[in-house]
Length: 176
Image 1 (tube, rainbow, N blue to C red):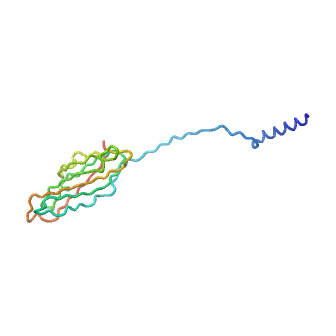
Image 2: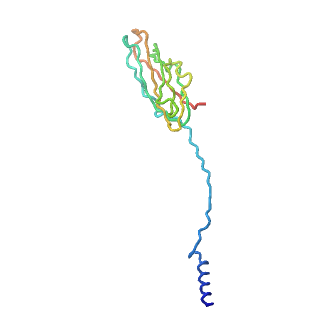
Image 3: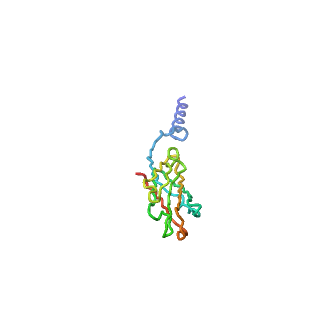
């Protein structure tokens, strides 16, 4: 009987000393890692320029014309838009100038979608003197901007005919 107890003892000792026969998992160990990321401030037009606006022809029966073009502005923050108020933005053929007005419309007015309130028609030299304020929505990262232009001529003269050109530049800056 002592011999049997001795064999049981040896077998038990062999089982527990081997570690592979009955292994208890080690206690859990934890590690933490602090993660940070910065998203760059983005303000970008969908294209480098608006499509050209052809206002057609002005004549003695048709003394006013207007047209528009649009672009998408991508942003992840509140921005403002200003305009070129120089003579570059006034329709001219070199010798004569047309009454030139601009306005902006947006596909949204802010709030749940990125956007702004539409502007009123303004002469080229006063257009966006006070910048248009675009409010960014966290769930909408773009706004369609519609640039409209209107041209008027009071009196058509024989020598005022020809092609008239203007260049309007819109600049977007971070809202301060």
